Image 1 (cartoon, rainbow, N blue to C red):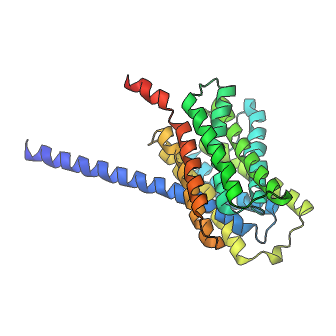
Image 2 (cartoon, rainbow, N blue to C red):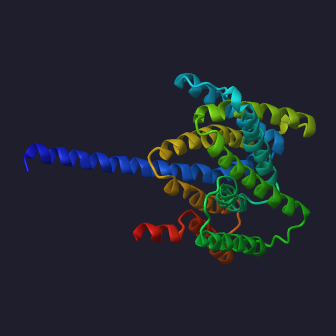
Image 3 (cartoon, rainbow, N blue to C red):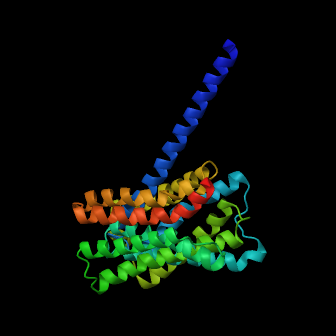
Length: 314
């Protein structure tokens, strides 16, 4: 092989290795960003009521999204034919689910919140079968069964006899997961042509404004009593988790297969449980570790159906 060709091949190999390394680091960044989101919410709602906390997070994120829209030349307005879809996204993806998550974390630990929310891809699978007529394989049904049985054991092992407050917190988080899943499926059907920046910018701004206004009327927050820690958490949620994590995620979506990238939803709860346990001073019990591993393994099965893999090998 000529020397020039060898040098070119070496340079190409190094470029591929560097690209793979950067992609891996970005994947880890998304996992860490979304894994720490739950602790950020927990800290935010320590001194900020849930409605107000949800709204402030979005109002902090909105100017940055608006800047991206202006830089890229993307419209912040949905097509007129998608007005109903715009309302659905604003209310069903941003406003109500994020309030429910904030409310849930006033009663449930951050790690358990992440585990509960990790059910979301399963709900996507179910809604995809109902509305998009996508097939559900037997192995996926088994995975769903393992996942939800493990979730039940987690709730039991955590000593959640589910008094009224705890039960309402769990239901709120699961409801948020269901609403997000439904929104993802509806978006796949109706909003595929809408740019990512357009999809997020105006809904986030309006959701933030509405949540804050409702919070002012219902919760009557005392802004003077908001701690520095809560303000820092809200800033982190608005800038890093909402904007940074989102941008990196969609950057990776163009470079990784959706199946591989979807494992973010399996990995980030692990970070959330570990970080939440450290912050809240609650050691991870053997039962919690075991049932969490089973839960995430069950949900991982739903993403890679065995029958589909075998069919490809035949």
